[in-house]
Length: 460
Ligand SMILES: C[S@@+](CC[C@H](N)C(=O)[O-])C[C@H]1O[C@@H](n2cnc3c(N)ncnc32)[C@H](O)[C@@H]1O
Image 1 (cartoon, rainbow, N blue to C red):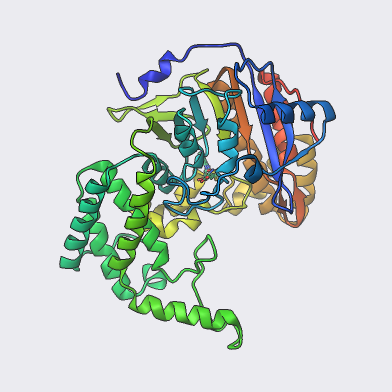
Image 2: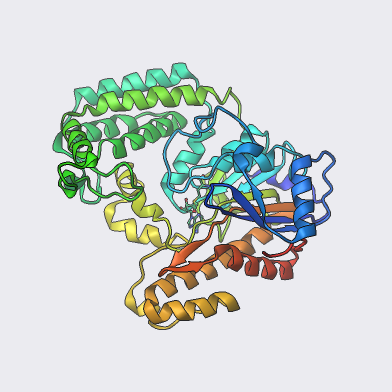
């Protein structure tokens, strides 16, 4: 049976959909602002979720929810393998944990999908809750982190592999660095030499899951030993002189740059690998298979023989996802140094990689000369205002809305009768004007209801 074949055996049940959106309040609490739900047939229910849905359906008002309190766990954030690698706009693990810790929306063995899986927070929580998990992400680094996060390996194998890589890397320093964007701007020469030697030693590891684990650890080091400011997600070079000499950051930045000049990358990766081996051990052995695809608008997954197979319609029991926002996070730019060092995307291909991403920020002038409509009345009114000040920003937002529409259509195709969808969305600003992703989401939801999703709880 091919890796994908088990999807065939999912039985069909009566349609039962829930679409939940939330936006974040200033106090870090979360508001469930809209729910689409139909006739839940769960045998065992979670009382909290049931009562939230009931209250929401009755009062037609957003409910303030603090997921940290709903799912208390003092081990978070360093729980299981969640912190194996940083990633921009990571989801709070408590959110999927809450929706997966009851039988109301899915049961053990059910198929759970995150079509914008990023670093795999939902996928990990799904396998920890004994669901089968499927994820998709346009960013190859996200796919590498996601699959490594849920692949248990023994510490003996990993420690041996780390020792072998370090030994080989220390022996050879004549490796050529890969095509990394502005390499010499971001890294000191001795760091480039050590990273190149490490990369060469790692890619020689024959066992693929072990190699992927080593690559993830290597990727963590890349940002740590670069001159990029660790406080920012997109690379911005540290510059101590940016601050007045009496400013705290002047001292901190100069000290960091001095440390980087003497840094020993081999020691850094050893520390990262040790911490990540301990994290992998927390998976406690077996997890269920996770397949990771590349585009939320066309869900297809690799089979064991390397072919791509379209995800079957009506196959997913529960989807939980936090989609990208319009121009808010620069996933490709934020991970450009990692993508280069891992040879997942050479510098010349970064723009092409960005074009695969929903919510991207770069367009040629000819592309936005003709206004694009989002076909959502409220959004189009707002976008016409934005266009007067900044046609590029308006174009970014309308393309975003259209592409998210395609992703929602695809989601609709694969959700099985009786399935549920949980959307995690926040509002942002476009040229200083509030852009309510949540209310455009509601319009999308209304359109989704025309496709068969039924909205049982109202807009704010
Ligand atoms: C908000 S992040 C998800 C973060 C994730 N929940 C986590 O915890 O790491 C949104 C993700 O959508 C991805 N993305 C953008 N366009 C996509 C597309 N067309 N198909 C699939 N994923 C896409 C981005 O690469 C990014 O990783």
